[in-house]
Amino acid sequence: MPQEIMRTRSAQGHLIITDTAIIIELAVPGAGHRDVLMRQFLTGVDVKTVFITAATITFYGQGQQKLVATMVKAKEAKRIQALLLGLP
Image (cartoon, rainbow, N blue to C red):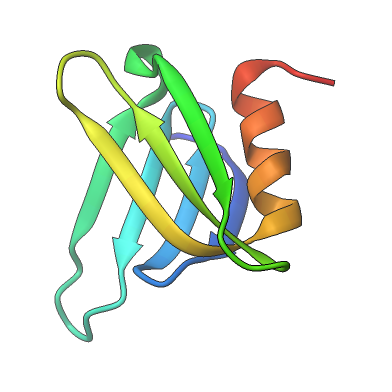
């Protein structure tokens, strides 16, 4: 079972980082929909600050696959980027 490392809110719903995947659980009531990018296929992470306290994170996978989480707290976005890219 994947171990959850971090969970935060985004405009889409919950952004969840596990030891094996990046998951966006969409906040559509009753839908139970998830967008998933397996960490083994992660090729890059881009963080763009859109407000002083909010950022957009784009996770790039192989080929054309990408996940976008908007309105994530800026500090948490930077922490996620560092975690996934192995930065201090």
